[in-house]
Image (cartoon, rainbow, N blue to C red; front, side):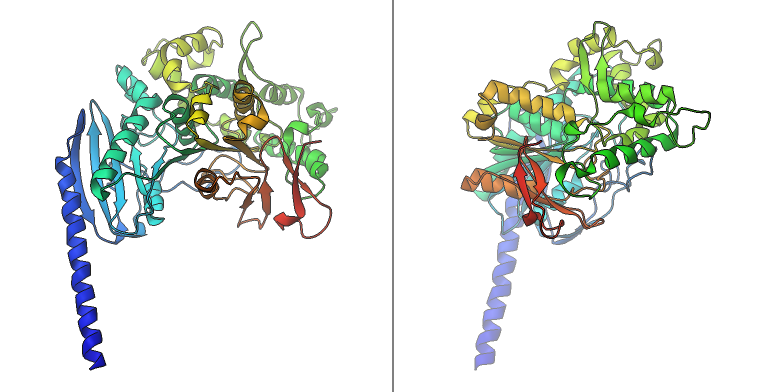
Length: 517
């Protein structure tokens, strides 16, 4: 008798599950006819649980393996299946004239939150990998191609297409966000209770842009290594290329070793991690060659080149174009010696500003005229350097910024400079830390593709949610590196992690967040 009852319960459960799944599929299909301004829903389908293979023509795969010293990152890998996803409703959308995005919504067990995800470089493709990661954690999520098609860092899409520059700069992610929320509300019967945006590099720039231009879009944003102030970042990168061309490949790592040796103990522990490179007192000339043998030293021209990278870029009047890179980032400066890197950053000017003009010579870059023209033509859309975050703070938005000190692609000094300018406008550091906090990682490189030896793995989104939803501001974020075994607290700037002097140095409890010294 018990067996019959249990069998009946199992049968009813299965039938009920089938009925619920069918209803979810029907609800998803209905979204195809949802009417939104200037919008066409091109696909609305229920996707069963399991592996999802992204379209091969519209996406790239996971981040490539980190390159060897002095090499540019390899080209993006092809798409791979995204494994073990729950059943979800997949909606593909086009917003006139050319913005495309997708919204993924769990068929059940939705956590009530929406997560927008950013892109890297000039990528013009749906970020399926991060969509899958968000979906697997219960989020309704969305990603856009930013209004153009590009699987790498090419810039030819901007020639004769000024709207694409506007879309990339800010419009695409905003339009995605507004419409994604409407789609989510239609699917579930209610909109998301909380909305978040996460991204690193260009994704960090996009997150920052959302907070600056559209403060009502998200309750919280995670801003990783933001490639904002884009015109000036790429001008500064061109400056780095000019310097890197004069440096021998082995000299980048050679100097990095000497910098670390000189400043490693500043935080009280010998771990090859410099907690605050801004307090690192090192003279590059101390390793300059004094004789004919240049195998274990820097030549005079190399010393000058490194000094130029640390000092940053200025125009002919001495005005700063872009801040320099901090000590400890020189280990990755070899990236700028690679022609692929030069082609990427000069493409901003060659294609987006000069519209492919073959007469423009990247090797004769003018830090006065070229930067000024770029600021006037595309900077208004792409720079995202406005430090006024008060509207975002007023609507109780929260922001977690993070950056790696060893980042050789985007200077952590730019992020520190931006944060300090934002704090000055917001009423000081204490006032700013009520809604925005900056965390800097020692030994941490650029985002997921170039993580570095430091503690680069941490859950910034979980910390942000606790802040937004529970009012618990992050006083420290625990970060780790599985490859090196290092584990450290990341402290809100201007504090740094300092070893207490007792216990395991890989136990974050033995570090305190304190003012730099």
